Length: 170
Ligand code: ADP
Ligand code: MG
Image (cartoon, rainbow, N blue to C red):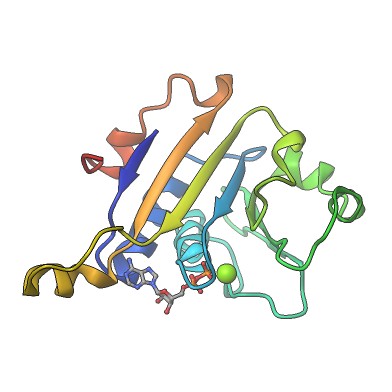
């Protein structure tokens, strides 16, 4: 488990773009973190890195949105599970074909979608903890922490640091 600390929204997007370089069809990414943490921002970077069509946005009414890839890369299926209450509702989304043929990113999927795939990246987006003691810390207060926990054999030999840069000490 490693943590990166993007300083601003563009850095969060850049982290997503770099992560996209590791992603291929069939991969599942589960995003956790409070409202406003930066889950959609990270997904925007993933979409840009994959080179998919359509703006990645916080879906208000839409629960799952497919972004086709007109190039060589995989499609992106972006799921916002915020409004989903139960596993039955996750089942109803019928993500099986997406999970095979696309990169699937699920916001608010914690506790719901782990059973869908043994191989997955669980990413927690948050704000650094602790009090603000000086001006430098205040300036940094906009930063986010992005903690990645890779599960399953798919990710065993993947070097996240090579793709994302050195993590911060935690
Ligand atoms: P979520 O999907 O988790 O609810 P969003 O991705 O919509 O959150 O982001 C909420 C806000 O946080 C946006 O205004 C976004 O620009 C901002 N944000 C994202 N990453 C960072 C960062 N590293 N530092 C400061 N603000 C950020
Ligand atoms: Mg969101």
